[in-house]
Image 1 (cartoon, rainbow, N blue to C red):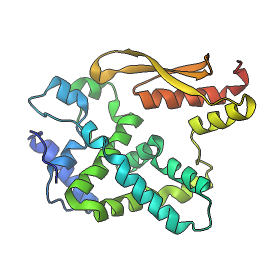
Image 2 (image 1 turned 60 degrees about the horizontal axis):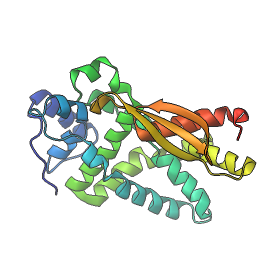
Image 3 (image 1 turned 120 degrees about the vertical axis):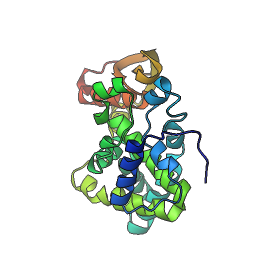
Length: 245
């Protein structure tokens, strides 16, 4: 179990997260990391006396357990599928858009702990923040109750959506689709570069550029490097007929 620094002692927040854990049938042995999973960095930046940490430290850990659980389950469930199909399945499950949808299903937006300006800016509905919450929450479960309980959560709420993803042709993300297109048409793999950052630390805006060789084919702004790159890839792919090099 990993100890945390001073966290929020506000009874309202503690009661809200306690109620969420009850709804999810999670019986914690140590509470702090579950609360930390919902603390956005804006609160720490503006009110460090209220909370000394935010959820990005937990988010750093997320993919190891999530990908292990998903990879193992796919391997068992699809013994006749080649590795490239299993890779597509896994990517579709763990991508942030899917995790954001899971967060909305579980009403995680109601539990996000933000500073007041982010509250006014409708950040509770920000897909990237919601995906971060799911990632952090998985590690809160793992650090508290270990692998088996984290696995139960992942299989029940995340992996269970695979059939819907397959049936609705949601397997490939736009970065993959753009790469397949540019390799087929130009024999070149896209490169993504973040060339501009602006705004405050907790409200950053990133501009990502998509290059084929040294030619810029598209750019896009986003609230994170990952989001700006994925949105740039989406817009480039949807307008692929305009790409010239």
